[in-house]
Image 1 (tube, rainbow, N blue to C red):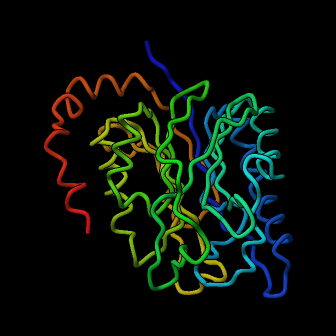
Image 2 (tube, rainbow, N blue to C red):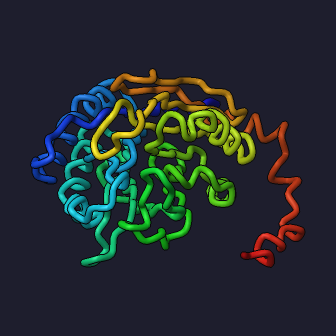
Length: 292
């Protein structure tokens, strides 16, 4: 018996803004730009929808300026998660909502909240691997590394995991999500041409193959301030447990990308590729022993 679920990803360019615009105005206009695409997803019958990394503003870690921490909210008690919970309830659609989380004054995380189809908050993933790289990825200036591990969330439709942007370069967490039973892993990202584009269609399909699950990868589109040295190249996609891309967005277009996912296909693939059966964790202890 098939278990078909329509899933969606939203890739979007942040609205343009002037240097003197308030952070709250930028945030509001970014949310408003997403609403028609969220409505489109709900009206199209999408059952699980994922938004892009820090969806309600620009990718501000391109510079080091504490003003951007005005974007931060409590999770789940902040206004954005409450708003998205209403959309989830309205459409019967589970949602992954990546925002800036304030745990307490001065402590912030790059976080994705997970909301079920009835609007119930299920939990959050805090980005573990934080880039601090030239040019323009200064996340350790703003965020602590996530301290919640790699949770799997049991929505009404599927068991899902979240891995955020730079996390995708590290196979260990991707494996843990599979071992914990994730059927779909979502990777909201912000990545630019000329740096990692050649990896974009390699790493996530490799995680999907190695771990036998579906994966949805999101990237922004266009250019934005303060990232003035490159272009976000979109090309968000879903791939299946064989690593095949089954739906993909354009390079430069705000859009909703959808894919019909049959979760029974996971069992079909795993019956052939017995990667979990043939693992030998007892031989992997050097991963811990060889810490730098």
